[in-house]
Length: 143
Image (cartoon, rainbow, N blue to C red; front, side):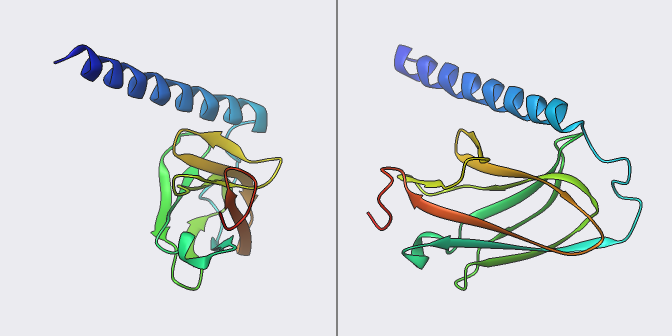
């Protein structure tokens, strides 16, 4: 392996460790998983992904992670209408989107990790809706 190849592997490993550290910090900050996680009725979660140019949101991967264990509870791709519907048990989750290069999720409470932007939410039985707004990384929507 070349020095450049080793540097890339080292950078990827560092990013992975940093991402895991962020998720652990989130779990500590939010108190870990809910004591009701998985014990009471399902949540029908609708994730809306908006962007000035809808083509930017279409096909993006959404993943829902349990905060306590970091296991994937659900995932899906954003439809051409900008929506993903999933079912999860009630509990505490990170709802994450993988924004395209040059774009980010707007908002002050967004948890940013390499290649992911997440919102922390506690979901109760019934229906829930989360909106993730994609904007150009430069801050100028539509660029």
